[in-house]
Amino acid sequence: KMLEGQLNALPTYYLNHNGYPDTYYSKVSIRHTVLEDENANLQKATLGATNRSLSINECRKLLGFEPLNDDDLTKINSDWDKIAVPQAAASPFSFTDQNSPTVSAYRVRNRIANEAIVGMEEATDDFEHEVRGLLRKYAAETKK
Image (cartoon, rainbow, N blue to C red; front, side):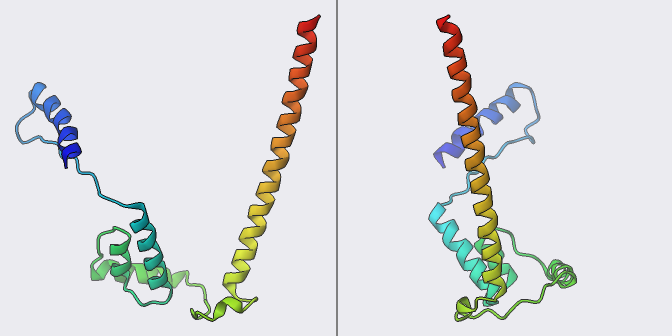
């Protein structure tokens, strides 16, 4: 609250100093967040949405979003129904199923991540090799 008051003072001073009417004002508010709370809320919302134990608005509240009215919820549901992908039912025992969409998705993600890491390592090695060569060449030229 103290920091918000100090941050509000500068724009208010600007408005008053430049002759803006009293109806113009500034309001700075800093959202109080704790990173651990956000991570926990994200996990709760994800789990609640996955196993459908939470409503959309309950998930939105956990994520810090405003609740939606019935018309907006209907529109969102109809939009998602248009692109819905059949999914296996969520089960705490489905992690052992090696052919599940989740396991396949993780395999693909891990393969892509590994390829990216290998590519970055190769690029880094090439860059280091080029820099060493340029430094050797520069050192040889400065000795002459």
